[in-house]
Amino acid sequence: MKMTKVVPFAMSALLLGSVAIAPTASANGGEAVVTNATQQDEQSPQVQPIFIKVAGTVENVEERDNATYYTTKDGENTNVFVVNKDTLIFDNTGKEVKLQKGDKVTAYTYANKPMLMIYPPQYNPEVIIVESQEMGSVTVDFFNEDLVNTDNSLKLNVGEETVVQSQLGKEVSVKDLAEQHLLVFYTITTRSIPAQTPPTKVIVLDAVAEEQGEVA
Image (cartoon, rainbow, N blue to C red; front, side):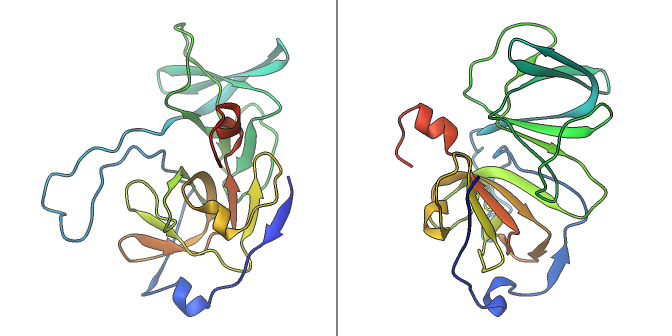
């Protein structure tokens, strides 16, 4: 992947209000209810799921058909993640890692992607996040022209220390992040609605868009 750093913003603008430390790895697949400060007591419309989020612990690894099949367990639920060279695999801090038995993972797959009707369910995820002991949070979601995600819970304030990448290795900058599906890594947020964060790394998930002939 090619990397570039983007134009800085004043840190005072990045962290409005008091700062809250994000304690664990988490992510948003666009499944939450839309809320805002003036309508918290009113019933809000449901957001159409963008990503299916499936978590579990890797219990078995099998190589076949030019892919690696990772069987995971989450309580009584068994799922299989089919991983190939295009699957993005990171820990919750944004470091690229290799999946191993015993890893606690969360996989993100586009909700409209076709699935085989078999048991256990098989997913071909775009992103797999491995939970580490280090502090770091993750969001996988669509961000609008203001870099706010689908449930109005997170706004990105991209600064000079933010690493910006493309899944396809294209040259990208902050202006290329608007109205895109993004993989976002961050550690701190403000106590506002939406919460604001200066992300440490942002990756544009442009591989599927290109396959479908969409305009990036």
